[in-house]
Image 1 (tube, each protein chain N blue to C red):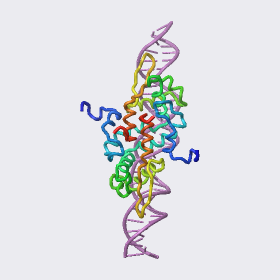
Image 2: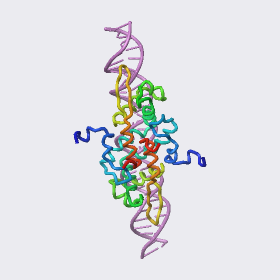
Image 3: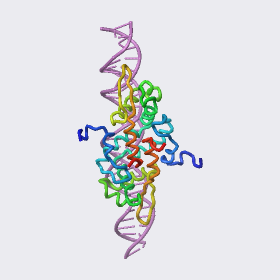
Image 4: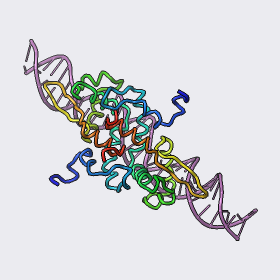
Length: 119
Length: 119
DNA sequence: CTGAGACATCGATGGCTGTCAACATAGACG
DNA sequence: CGTCTATGTTGACAGCCATCGATGTCTCAG
């Protein structure tokens, strides 16, 4: 492999794992998957992800996201950072605005890991 | 519907939701899905679920599970309860032993919700 | 009935985390 | 330069939760 494990985002380490139901997960595999699930296991983050994913081109401006929640701007920024850090969202700055975009392949892989489809 | 929403396990409320990427999740939908993800977002629980699911007949005795982890018996029992409470595991007592079994349909639905397949 | 084993429950505790206010940064514009 | 706007960072705090030891409950054997 070209990168060491710790340089990869959690999302990039998921592809290597068989579905949950096919064989027991090792402790190391579990430790790599859990950050992804933790990132999703928050109402605000789940909605943020869904909002970005279902937006035009799977991409949304932070300015739009702030208004959709009853949370302070720093809190939204924090949640977006969490989703970005695990590799579920990509980030691009255009002028004054920042756009977050969904990583569809990441979601698909995680879904397969849990649902057991695509094996 | 025959049961009120609060009587349903979190797992039973997931089927009603479209995949994350197809349309924005409402706050209520998110609140119903999050408990499921929280249940999975722990290394011990993720491994427990995988261990049960990949076991013979998708079912395992607590006595086997206890030995597979470096955790106290009460802690394992607690984790199994969490997984059972959200509807990911079923529980049956046979003699002195307690068996937990995977709810495959629950996992499949959750996987579809995240991965967006099966729409 | 008594003891032992399997599992659940309880209470306490230390660590993690979601939230906010305050502040910092970085462009755009004049 | 100074200001305004968009976004990120920091520090603090309250609430949640994973974990454990102690204890309770249930079942079976003798």
